[in-house]
Image 1 (spheres, one colour):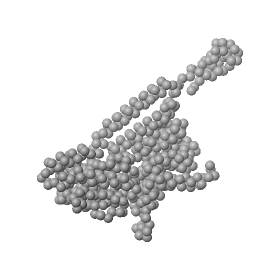
Image 2 (cartoon, helix red, strand yellow):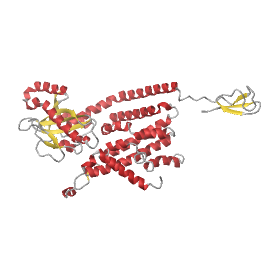
Image 3 (cartoon, chains in turn yellow, green):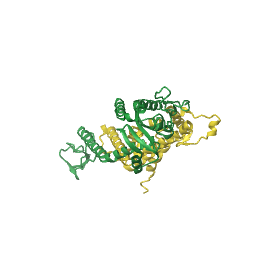
Image 4 (cartoon, chains in turn purple, red):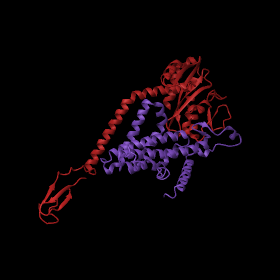
Length: 208
Length: 262
């Protein structure tokens, strides 16, 4: 057990949560961070889906990494990811239809998510299955964390709700408060991500 | 890659590599180097052209087989889900929500009394009142929209609606399939004083007239898409809506035509 959770493996999991966060440090996956964060719920769903898919595609690529011809490795990675996502979405459609309807819009976004390709290329191609699995989970959660933060701010200020429940009381509106329509626009999530990166970098200044 | 080990039998020089050099580099004798131990297993050269092509071909075949197998094995279950979901959508447009699983099939069989035109007009009986469900199709910002509009038996006002979409933005345009948006249509008159279909979707919070509906904030184009889908859709059914009930045969033909035009 101690070997499974060695210092190195723990770092593969915990680094992407903070010091090597895929969005704030590696600046990957920005495109989907814009698309799905106008409300909290899609942000959470997207974060969890990416976590699962990154972890399992990392494991698969890591298992076959020694057989992959160097010149077509990106294509092999893409095929593995696309096949995995398609099969998972087909299974969901057959057995948990409600979930698949919820996820249908994200399937395309997951396949083309740069975090997936980035982790496959940077980590899974050089490491064994178990560290790769941890790396995938860590990066997925690091991504989910930022998505949830952005989704939280945007839904709260843009709609006055959280997860669909009204949290800004009616009396505040009666005093003249209005929801910020700008927050519902994709451009605002870039600005929020920018603010998060700024805060993150000034906190971690010494370690750079 | 593992290497072979050669030892010179004259001077004891050790050479490691894939093959022995012609001359021993130390004592300059020929044919003096001898292989020690078993020859190393030569690994596949994963960078060769042949390997790459074969690898790609095998990978494609395996993935294609997997995908085909999954798709055909799961098809019946998926079709059943889609059919049940369509029934649920029709029931939702009749303001019957919150059902799942077998209950949908049972309720559908109980409520829907007749399919007047295939996949476009249904007659329903909700708590003793006759309603008609009309299928509509349209275009949103990114992809197709569809929905069902149910009308009361006098065919002049909306009873309920259901809308869904292929690929509208999550959290913005995708909100058209939330009940608060759909319920705004309930009880709206279909025709204005001039007898034209006049339901419109306006900016959120700006609806003033009876035929106006609040749009979704941040999703103006999708909201407009819903409005024109409902309007164009209902226009297609105009003869059914305005016609007498006995002229059913004609309306069926007209309604089907209007769908094929779309």
